[in-house]
Length: 349
Ligand code: TXA
Ligand code: MG
Image (cartoon, rainbow, N blue to C red):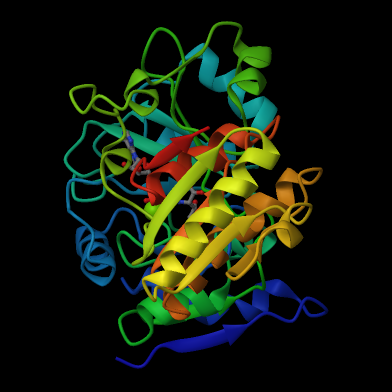
């Protein structure tokens, strides 16, 4: 199929620019669109066939549920069976924004959309293009990240095109996203609100609003018997084709260790890369260095991470050493994605 490409012109009325894409959604088609976190691959959440087509285009396992996007908080009522008090507080505090809430569902959203679960994930994004598309189409938009299953989520329209051109009806190019990591998922069906996937909104942010909150033990544990509650967190994700190893410890030691390893790998004729902060980039020798951002600007690090993970493949890197990025606010989310990409291979010095 030919994929239509719409480029947003910010100086013009958005409504008119998303009209055709909205019609595609209404008619059961698939449209990729920007949100403030990552690009999403949208379809009509009430339409089973649209959901099946999303799974097919991504090559995604059908037991991994989709997030339903809404343009206004009043839309929650239509698809859930219960709104807990904690959900109201969290919605007030963080919507529109990079947060997804898990509710008990009613019968409106089909099981094909929720991967067979009796709960539904709901998000109200702040991105103007996403909002215009929902308002224009009038449909609940089911949207996973717009990447091929297993690859890093798209932070630019060109990433979407790389993975999905020819497989979906349209892509709306609204430029680079601002956060670059997927939304924080909070399960409010449990007595204590539980973070199933860390994101820009941290555990402390959640606690500040609802008091008690916790992390899903399944995402903190390396023990494969403790399964993450969000099905998508159980899969290997984001991994580049080359072998990625995270090196943790004091700055000088990390640099010395990585430089030594680069030398060993070069002797074996391997293409080696280093993923570093901009402050430490000049300390590495004889490897291609990808500086993703300043340690004083964790948002820059988050925004560049997936783009760099994709570049490792494009540039056919065989062995990649990464510094750890334990930054104060979103470090937990950054490290969650980086460790997944590394298949939890960590050298601690
Ligand atoms: O920022 C985001 O959340 C992006 C943008 C497009 O909104 N979307 C996104 O969707 O990251 P996706 O499909 O790539 O990730 C959805 C995650 C998966 O890990 C899935 O298992 C989990 O949410 N999930 C969805 N519904 C769930 C449910 N009912 N219970 C538990 N986990 C759920
Ligand atoms: Mg995803």
